[in-house]
Image 1: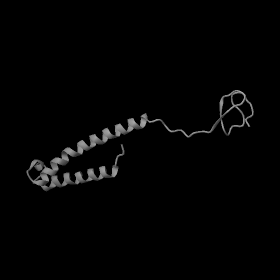
Image 2 (image 1 turned 45 degrees about the horizontal axis):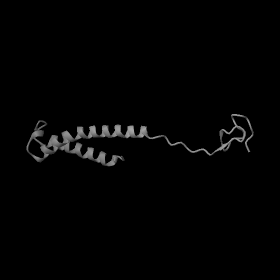
Image 3 (image 1 turned 45 degrees about the vertical axis):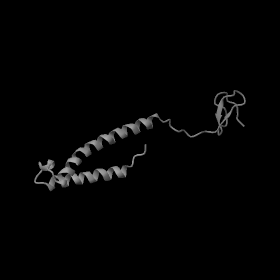
Image 4 (image 1 turned 30 degrees about the vertical axis):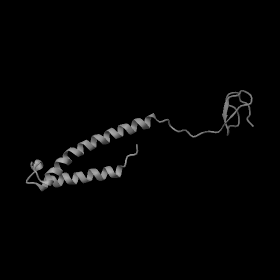
Length: 104
């Protein structure tokens, strides 16, 4: 799941602005429940901001659990087999670390 952080940040900023306008647009701080459009938008912002934070926290937890369950990608190392003992060795090794035979 890819998270669009720019859209989420814009969403939070817009609702913070709406909340501030709703707070100062009415007859006072306690007028959030008025029937005007500003009061209604303020009430929506009052509920949407905490819900958005909960959604972001849950999305972060989901992302972390998915990232933790994915195996870490390791760079593949070219290997070859020792002619004497048959154990795997890396391509750039000069001698076998298990039996000490010089590798060609």
